[in-house]
Length: 118
Ligand code: HEC
Image (cartoon, rainbow, N blue to C red; front, side, top):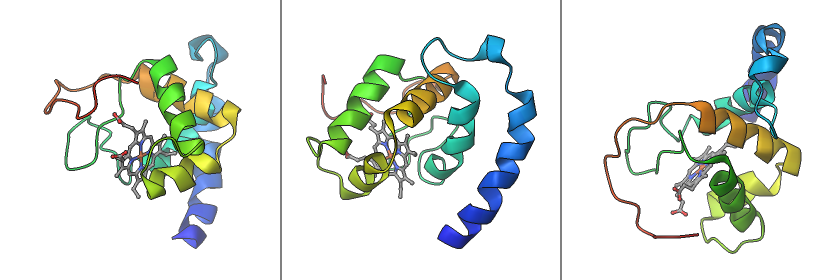
């Protein structure tokens, strides 16, 4: 899996890179970088926003997204998978992912969130 990622990610970067228009980039995060990094996330998180046991992350407000990722990074949120993933993302990369996922349209919520507020 790591091997595949190493091969495909630069390819995707090549594809998306030239299309990354600075005008469409989010105010804080680099949306094109976020799109590039998102290929890993969407193996688990449905890009459609559909809930299939893993909470959807499309359409999350950027600041909540960043706050949640920081909580995983600090291990204030429990999930070990997300702790590992967030742990190796830089602040810049998290902001980029927030900008990208925040810009996507979420499907109508299929399920209420378990935890209310962050
Ligand atoms: C191996 C599967 C997997 C991958 C890959 C993955 N996640 Fe997750 N993610 C999960 C699971 C499972 C949860 C729910 C964990 C929990 O209950 O705290 C979660 C939760 C989250 C949440 C919190 C959602 C909410 O509403 O509480 C965010 C944000 C998130 N992930 C972002 C990401 C990002 C960004 C990436 C890519 C860099 C990513 N995830 C990659 C499995 C994954």
